Image 1: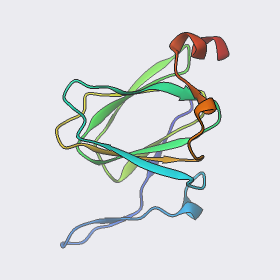
Image 2: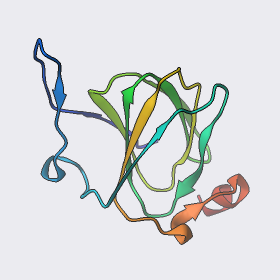
Image 3: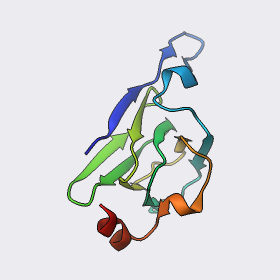
Image 4: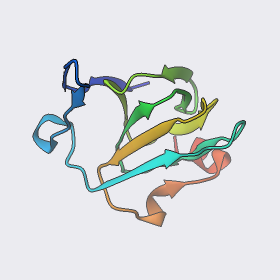
Length: 129
């Protein structure tokens, strides 16, 4: 499965750390950004794949698990550092779960929202793999 950890450049300072994201240093130009927050205990997000879109998922605060599936293989990744993100290529099923209290998850996307790019049913995804 082709997922990649991305180190987020940051400047450590006694007054607080500063993380920097620039289009020129990312594997795609950011066309959309959104964030998840106040996710109730026990809730899951995601549960879909994208035909074309790429995503960089960054835990700004708190922690959660990212479950990734390619139709054959499955990997569970714990995200808990705002200095590291996971790049998810297209045609990878993603589920986000086990959110700690106060988690904020930033998602940077390579495309604007296009409903036709989503595969929302697992059986449809498996057929397209």
